[in-house]
Image (cartoon, rainbow, N blue to C red):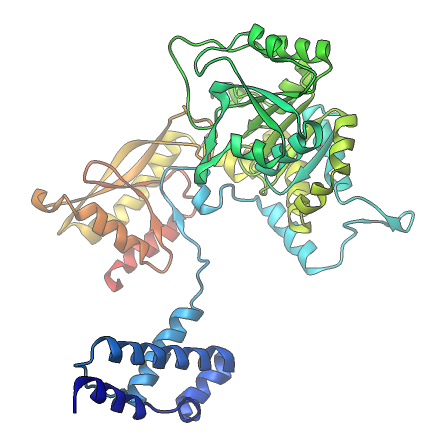
Length: 473
């Protein structure tokens, strides 16, 4: 018998699917996970066996019922394992895009659960008994906070920009400085958004220098609006020049063209009052005379993911009539969370304490060091024999393109191998161990050292418990 015939013979010895499903263990799995999951897993296992038999014709092993059950348990366990799990963000990045950006304050979490679990007057006016607008719950509060005539919200800031461009400059030119043609996370580029919005990009000036005359010369009958985008993750320094926004406001009034600014990560409160570099707020831009501003709800604002458009009421009205708005509108989760966050912002000092993003940002280095010392005293003896544990000074970042040039003094706990010869791969392997913990710990590697930045750690017992369980990993 040749190898092919031997493999073919093994195929006839494969247990049939219906007999496998009738086994007591398989029946228990069906009761727990459902028939579809189990039968698909069995078919996949048998298909893989047949494939391997054809590929490796010298493999004479016949798959048994016990082999199948063992593989079945492992496959179903893997397929039904929860893929969305909590982690400890000790990377030093407050708004980590990969971790979901801003954490919601407790009051917003409670309101969201209530709204999702019950019937609420999302689009219903209980006074008149008629349909209303879901954005009524947030518009008045937001307008009051940022000095806007009107606002509207969509699912994220990219959608906000796209909706404005498609409404106000469809098939028309949009004037923008070359130095502002940004690319954000995920290789998402502003020129691509403009193209998708069915408008025409009209680059002004050069990468490093743009003059008012560049804008003036570019204004034609086919011009739709003047656009400015704030650089979210880079700076241009040296021989540079940008046009004063007041001059662009005057040009927009003179030419009757809307002037739109994309702030990206607009802050509702003045961060300079908390000791940080001044960050332009939507209020500042609208007060200056800008027609519309856009910004994210889940960055410096510390709320749910959404894109906020604020400014002139007549322009907002046009935007809301665009058919794309329906496709981009926010769900009741976002409305409930944003509503709660805006209520907090009505008392700015309360906001600093209750909104996690602002609380993490304003934690003092002394406070974090005290926390580091408490954690160090407990965990250092656990690693003493092989790993050198040390309290170190480090720097945190805001993340997600917010405050790109700000390095925030912080304190962390560093892990380094006692044997210098093993330091090369140690931080990579140790980081992998931390990621395999029941609650993965995410730090950062710096100079053969794994550093856990404690700026975003509030419950230190969570970290201690996970590190104590390392022996089981």
